[in-house]
Length: 180
Image (cartoon, rainbow, N blue to C red; front, side, top):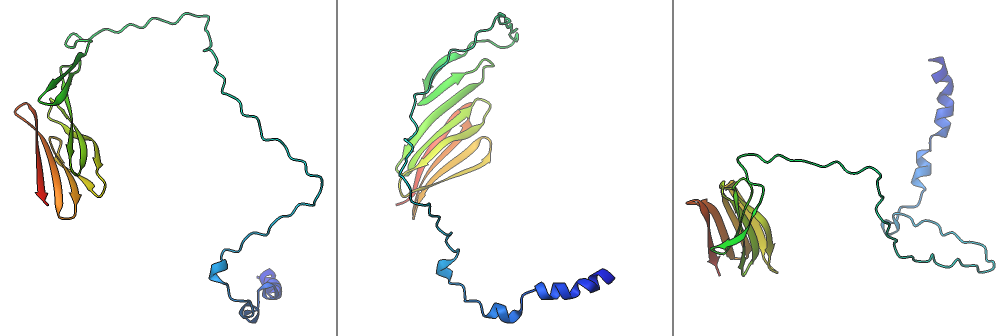
């Protein structure tokens, strides 16, 4: 307590006086923040370093190992095949089948408002791969369940709707135009 009382006069003298603050010039908002001062170097002989030379990236050969790599073995599951069937086309959909027999359907849809790529799988999941609106249009995705998707391409008073669902063991898509 005695120390703080002894320091009180020192603390009071180091605080700015309110009158001193009022005498400071008003800050100009156009000059805020203040520019940093410029640094000048003394004039002397002009010696410039040449720019660093550009070099092409070098490629190195991969390191060789003295021990041979271990062979890897995989045991295929008895209920799955290890090859994937080539892609086919069904009703405009590109169809692939994986080793488990799951079929994947992918198709692109183009309307005046933009383009959407939709993917469906044989387990009933419908998903949007990409949606790119045309100039002046916006895009909106609405999905209330894994098997029901709508992609809206919108402009003022005009929309295109691409509605995709899984129906009767295959993808079903309906394209609609609303407004003009």
